[in-house]
Length: 205
Image (cartoon, rainbow, N blue to C red; front, side, top):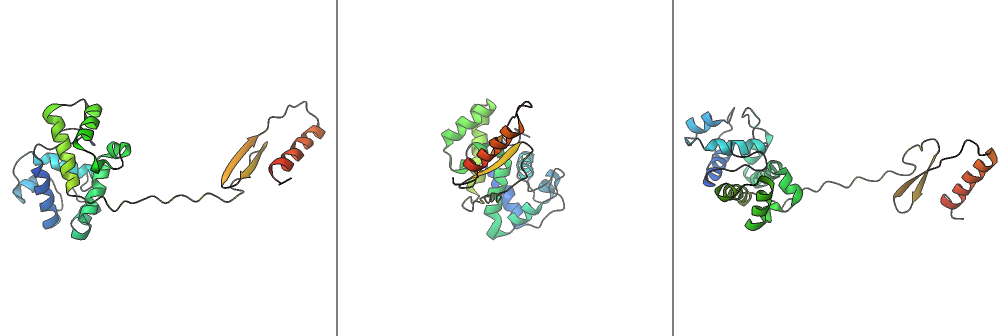
């Protein structure tokens, strides 16, 4: 299990291609583990375990090897590349948080990121980069899902707390003003304060 989630690597990038090709072109197994990969797909090299770790990180299989809905989507050719792109984002959360376009980063940029985050160098660093770039080469990131902007609440958007006045400042800016009143102040002065607040903040006077 080389590396942790977000920093996985395989020993040979071609193993990713071979296993994903089997996943797309064969039936969906009840459980995808190394025993199945070895005995049914005849991919006997134990290093394929590393690819299975990545599939789990991507949400294609669960911790026990059972294929998920993402795996099923990947088996649908028109949706396969988009499903893989989504899985890669899930498998590399911190990388995509730092670089939303991580799939288009150069090798030198990826090298800087992985080296800074892991302290790895040499062949291990090369494998991390190769693993990520191989995955991205098989995916389609062009269909980017953008979260909808939440509509701001209409005023009054909440009941002001006692001693506070809710004020709307156009456009769509909400301000709470907190007033601290001395217990020694007279009722007349308190009334004057709130009259002035209404006059200068809540009206056009």
